[in-house]
Image 1 (cartoon, helix red, strand yellow):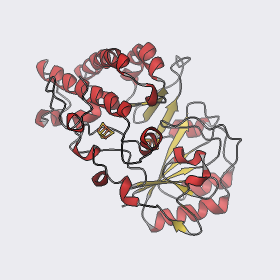
Image 2 (spheres, rainbow, N blue to C red):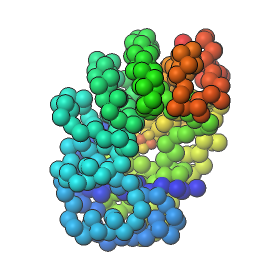
Image 3 (cartoon, protein in one colour):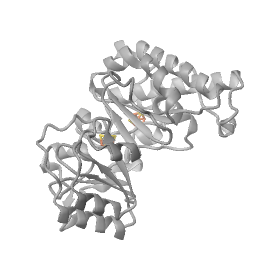
Image 4 (cartoon, protein in one colour):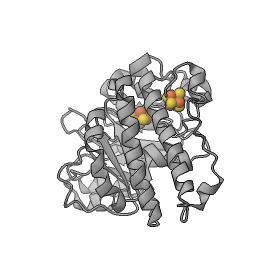
Length: 325
Ligand code: SF4
Ligand code: SF4
């Protein structure tokens, strides 16, 4: 069942996820199209998330946006300082030149990074994590992950886990998607694009997510005629035969990556699975460390957790024959 509507407000709006930044010229969604899309969101009780361009929107857009309950996703490079200050999600493409940036509590930050940049620069997060409540690390080149990177990726995760332990120890339970989500979850929590979430783009059409907007042939309906998702069951976890037996509950289960890597939206590429399972096991080591050091003060919820680190056995994942140590 649909729960969320993402609205990409402009063709030039930056990416907030795995897909590349737009190379299109700025072009705003027509006001009437936006109005129709938001009317639908109200009728269906959808939570709206707006992705903004870096330039400031005309006043009539801001007024229409403010008429619905919503969350704002903006780039750290936004020219609208008021929007940046109030946004729920702030996207960062580089950890360079952030010395004077005013990180704030209560927001989610997204660091979009290549795997090599992450391996090189993740140490800089030790300066940022103490100043924020949540960071999502999103990889822009998952397709490039290979077995030669497994050891270094696991080591980087363990290094970041030390920062998390230090923060928990000083009563600051910062969240880092790669390490704390799996500990805190009770069930699968994926992106669910195409099932719970759909995207309206500036051409007035609906897409599974903004990543699918690069080719307008991927549209799944429009604001005048409504949604028309072909084989909608394929976007649901119960029709994803590998994922539904998996216990890496924090995985984004990105259907756009699936389509690019396997040509099937419900079949993941090995790269996504291996990275996600390295994160899952690092999460288990983190939980063990927190327990061993009795650092669960603020996070009593963790006492009841039963994660899961069984060295050499990766339940769920191994069943699909893609073993990863
Ligand atoms: S790790 Fe792989 S099998 Fe598990 S949910 Fe993610 S994409 Fe699916
Ligand atoms: S399907 Fe979800 S995880 Fe994948 S690019 Fe789209 S929004 Fe991001």
